[in-house]
Length: 237
Ligand code: ARG
Image (cartoon, rainbow, N blue to C red):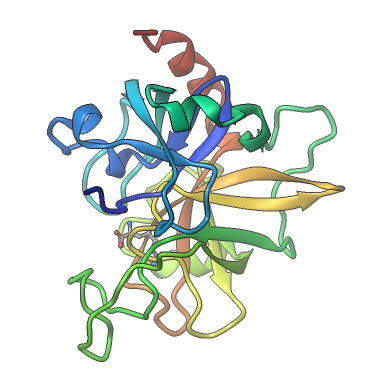
């Protein structure tokens, strides 16, 4: 029986992007975890994939604020359900991979999706909501909307030392809405014409949905070169 741990973004070519903190420090990572793809409701049976190989960014530090919080996974269809899934339909294009892509800018509406914890919580214990009740993950995919707000992260400890353009700092307009534990590694996207492009990955924040508190995302355009190198270096077995 598998439980949900983290999100990820499928970018095509059997490659999934996720947060480094979802991978590093997990012993037996590739044998203990699988990638589920193509379903929104985790309670219904779905297709899961074996993780054949993975790379964590060499600059990642497994302590908040998780610098370089990015990893690539190579997935392999090793079940009938996975083999039946047409992976091409599930790929998202990364921002910055086409000429004319506009960088993330103030005023953009950014969508974050995930199956993570659903209630506000203080920093510290991930399992408990702010009011002391349990803070369950969502069996169905949830989505929120945030806007980039670079200045809002200045208040976060450790954030100021980070390299700008490697992260996206974002705030919700709707009080009580945020990404949270369990959403990590999942996609932040932006509408561009009729498509949605991948702009970020859920990384960290202080607690979840605390009033005025921003959330930090790994900037996908900031890591295109690393992603290209890392995916090329992944083994095929
Ligand atoms: N990595 C974080 C955690 O385990 C979740 C990331 C998002 N947090 C946030 N407040 N937006 O709690």
